[in-house]
Image (cartoon, rainbow, N blue to C red; front, side):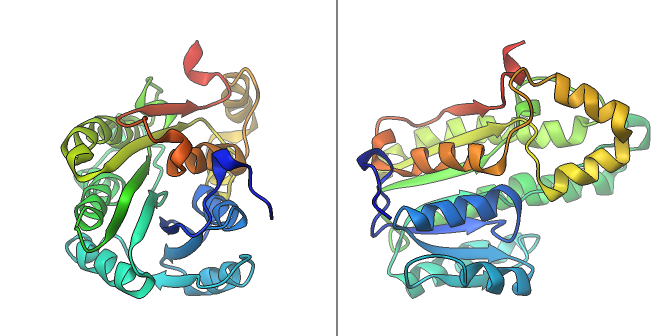
Length: 254
């Protein structure tokens, strides 16, 4: 595939978490189409093996790993970089969603979401910044959410984790700029994924219609978010860091 210059990822090497489904899967697939070599990370080996066989190009690898093992993340990132000769970019698309009213929230709910959505992001950044891991002009892209920018009933714990990602992005951008690493995050609205179908099942058709109506441009696709991720990975965004980019069909414009 011939890539337009503004999204040319030829010879770039990327680590994508959450690569077995949803936005992570779409970002990995699209990046490979634009010339990148991908390390696909997720827990489900069968899904990773299926995806790696679909990627164009050569040199892609799978990395079966459970990100709840947060202490082991930096060493895992270094191991991936050793296998691929360094990393130009890292996308943290893995995460968990929770729709739960405050009256039902437990401390285990809080710890579970913060571990995978926030603690894993911090430890991935710690591993990525190592001088033997990241290549020059490296880019780290985290996944926040539209509800990290605005409120929504029933998702207080989830939105707290995604708000934390936005402030983490800003602080990491300032800390890592001197190491030639850019850090940005994307804030998706609701896109049609397996996770979204689960939400639809829980809240019913009437509730889901309200969610859809809250997006002036309608619900998005995983590829809409992946396109923004690829831009932030590419050299076309070389002067962008510390930003939270809404990709939400107008949800947060209201």
